[in-house]
Image 1 (cartoon, rainbow, N blue to C red):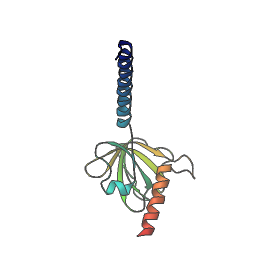
Image 2 (cartoon, one colour):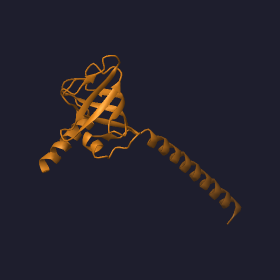
Image 3 (cartoon, helix red, strand yellow):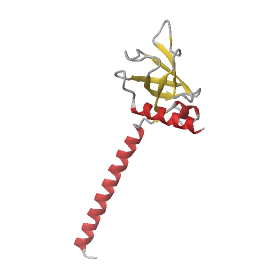
Length: 147
């Protein structure tokens, strides 16, 4: 092989290695920041990872909201009409948070199957429901009808 072709080949290989390394690092960083959505049924079935940030959503079950008298701690149950999951949150709930409405909670699942949320998102008008919650409820209804 001629020297100038060898030099070109080495440059091309070095560029490919650099691009591959940059792509690998970018994908690794993105993988760590992904928050996957899980329904209460998936969480109850053990499909959600422990101690990893997830998004859990569904309808807030009526009569399940419990507020602490001396702190900002709240506890409520979210359902997809098949299974339920308890969510705890410390902070001020959004103004639009209500029982019987769709929500998405971001947090970590603990060993007891309780989602410890650090953020709670509520709908922004009467007709809106988060797309993940809407799809999960539709899937849940279809699964229930198939049984």
